[in-house]
Image (cartoon, rainbow, N blue to C red):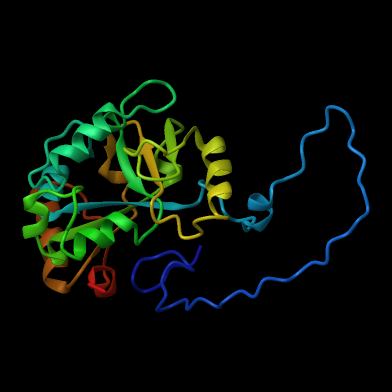
Amino acid sequence: MAECIHGFDEGLCDVCFPRTPVTPTRVAPTRTATARTPGRPAARTAASVGAPASLRLPGRRVQHVTHLRTLESIALDGELRADAEPDVDVSSATTRELRATATVPDGRSVASLVAFSIAPDSTRWQELREGALGSHWSDAARAAKPTEFAILALPVDALGSDVVFADGDAGAVATRFAAGVEAGTAALRRLHASDPEFRDAELLVAGPVPIDAIAVITVANDRVRDEVRALFADAGRPVPRIAVYPPAFAVD
């Protein structure tokens, strides 16, 4: 798969791969009835028909946004862990409580899994870089600048089979879950009809997730790139690919 100069897969960077608006084709309704064979699987839903054939969890990258001070601890540990205490905790107490009490289909709490966003520009990341207003965020989040964060991109293929897809904020009551890569892909394709950007969807992963799985770290500027290189070197870890892409940290 091709990548742009900013480290994103083909089609994920609006600068290098501008999006072309798609004009839906209207199909005239037909009155011809189609007989169903007993026991035959139901026809595909409109949601799955409208989703591109390439829309699958395998082959896709997911994102994890972290503060640079927390990234330093991740580099020292060599892994992302759900039970690790972040050096800069951007989540409010309310958010942590909701995610601790919310459960995935097998009974594990959402908080016991490492969370990744499906979209490169998720709703939560947009909120965070625009001032972290609202009940999701801590005072530390509101005091932080967007340039103090890094976006870790990891391929789903490197995360194993113990994954849970959430079609919205995993701590919200109305969110639905799908366990496993195959069921998660089906849920992702269904979600395409109502949220083609997947800005609220998450992928929850049984940790720990080794930092060797990181495909690219996106940062805001050259200074932060050098800082990230140094913290990995100081931790005695191989330095992942680092992309400098200021638009990802811009405030709308």
